Amino acid sequence: MSRLFHRRRLDGSPGWIFILPSLALLALIGLPILALVVRSIDRDFLTYVLSPTSVDALKLSLLTSVTSVLLILLTGTPLAYLLAHWKFPGRTLVDMLVDLPVVLPPAVAGIALLMAFGRLGMFGSWLNAFGITVSFTTTAVIMAQTFVSAPFFVRAAKIGFAAIDPQQQEAARLEGASEWQVFQYIMFPLSVRAVLTGVVLTWTRALGEFGATLLFAGNLEGKTQTMPLAIYIGFETNTHIALVLSVLLLAVSLVFLALLRRLETQG
Amino acid sequence: MRRIALLVLLISALLAACGTTVTPTPAPTAVPQTATSAPTAVPPTATPKPVTLTVFAAASLTGAFKEIGTNFQAANPGVTVTFNFAGSQVLRTQIEQGAAADVFASADEKNMSTLVSENLVASGASQDFATNVLIVILPPNNPANVQTLADLAKPGLKLVLEDASVPAGNYARQILANMSKDPTYGSDFSTKVLANVVSNETDVKVVVSKVDLGEADAGIVYVTDASAQADLKTISIPNNYNVIAHYPIAALTKAPNAALASAFVAYVQSADGQAVMKKWGFSPTNP
Image 1 (cartoon, rainbow over the protein chains, first blue to last red):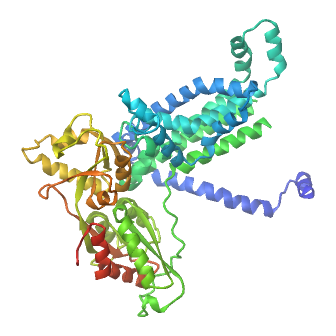
Image 2: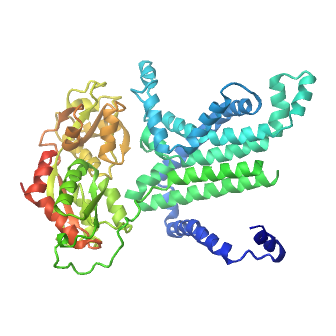
Image 3: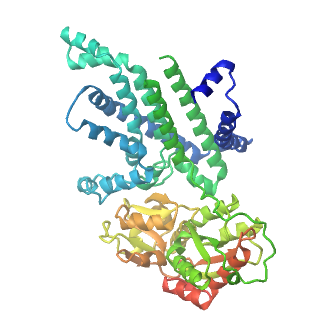
């Protein structure tokens, strides 16, 4: 192995044994993306983008994903801070709990949300007694998105907070700074890039949320039918809308990826 | 270290996002797309080598067709029947996209005739094998206290239907339109009921689950789905409003196992097959 890498450095040619498998994988990823774009190019592209179904889905996706990201910022930042800088019993467990939605299939997330917050769910029945029903509402969409996408933010922010030299905190505390001041003037400014990275990752995931939403929030145009749901339904009824929305999501994802690159390379 | 961690995060975010956005068209099944050689005269049972027959069937046929599949396997050693149950419109789309199915059983004529017009089903090959009617289902505890069909128009009721592209969803809307023509219900009945729809689900079984879980106050599904879930309350829909759903079945022109596909269709139409349909609450076409 070391010899191979050594050679590579000397003459710059990694050899076909590396290039061929790489090309196969790149083709598997690249060709469907290419086909998606080519097939959606149509002189009616704009007509489909501006159709009521598509506009409703776009608006709803934007509203719900932005709300989810804001909620995650408000609650995930303190959690990431605690996990990075506070030793407490059960921290590993909390860490694992926060990571769980990343590996959990979205359908499981949807069923879990229904069992907890559905009308007859463990806590939902209690809410229902106060006249609050969550399932089939836009709130349910936001809850599903928050559930599945929060870990991406918490993990990124935690890495950012943990990377800060503890001596800087110590110095600030010795000067008499309160815990909030330490966070506000030291920790947050120093980890802003990690926080932004987390926002981009979380937002991407929230926009793509499908399985949990369909199970927990249902599918109603303008209320719970986000872009991924409109794509799923559109695939069976109006393939054009499905293609057009897919390309829009693809474009958004590319923009987010470019943002991530910038955030990382500036570090 | 930090960059690697971020990279891992990014990759998993993308994986998760992609995995859920792109709906899985069931992988063209293991059966290779052999050129449809002219149906051989040899009956399928004469060749004991293992073959898989792939049947795409409407979600409402789930229980009945699973039983028929088991019986068909018992009668044809070496044959494995695999099913893909989903909304008929999903199955039709998958067949159009090249899924290697042998048989298609639809819950409406529309999706079948679309395949006929695309030469994916030979014209004249499709035949009705059962009919079904629709019924209103309520959760066991009937939270919205629905007593009559007219109650479906009560403001604030949570009704789940199938999407209009799903046969059952289309039938349900036809029924509401029929009722609106009756002065007893009033011309705005359909509009009022449809305003209560909280979700348009992708197949009839999901509607049953969501009503059974108590998430919704009512749903409109096939009689057969309602009887498969014994604890549900039901309100039957009189014949003058109801729609009779005709279920057509056909072997596909590109069926990898053409002879076996025809044998399966024949079995569904046989006395044995029709008896199973009846047992599951359908009205058999050839009893």
